[in-house]
Image (cartoon, rainbow, N blue to C red; front, side, top):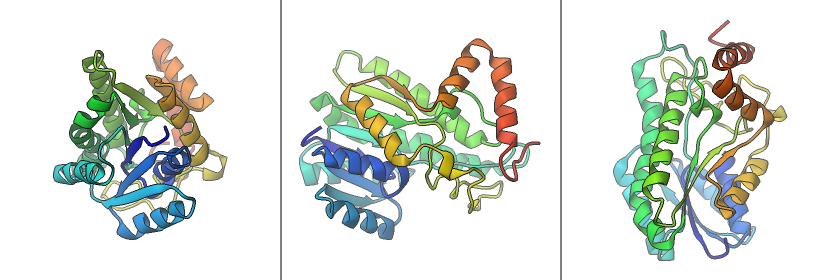
Length: 268
């Protein structure tokens, strides 16, 4: 990965920040994006102090023109793009019968359309370089998580998009990775949207018991370097996908009861 140009959406915190640090330490040149300039500046300064070649771009992945400008900025800074990591994402927590539809739309715009836009504008350079497109998906993209209508729907859509892309680019030498971290300690649950669109504020899960963002980034880095087509992390995630394939009714019951144990769960 030395001297490869990596674009990471949503790179100022969590898995995105950990990926920027991991690839940067391996000699890659990094452009991270985020909506908050203060958060971007803090991350950039921190990683530059670790001798990482990193720049930031303030933009919203749900806005198509921001993605176009992001790709242009990467090319202006580094001359090309080798790898795009579609990491920016948001979650939600509410029953479908209670959630405002605009909340679901917002999640889809960030998680699915954001990846669509970013890939569209970075792809010409990636094809030229026979590089990689990475989507940070989720176990929620393989089986529906109760109380996560927008999140699961967006990840199912992302998985389908990456599958189409992988097939269409079969003879180009472009690598497409679908990465499913499972539950990872990050801010995504704190910023998850409630039924009326407000941020949840506190995580309903015990973050300390989850895989760290740094562990997750290490596995994703190796999967990109080895050009793997898919990556499923955590034993819980692998079991859920296996059960859903061979015994879906059991998978649904187990997922229901696991999610019902969350603090203030919308299901009982």
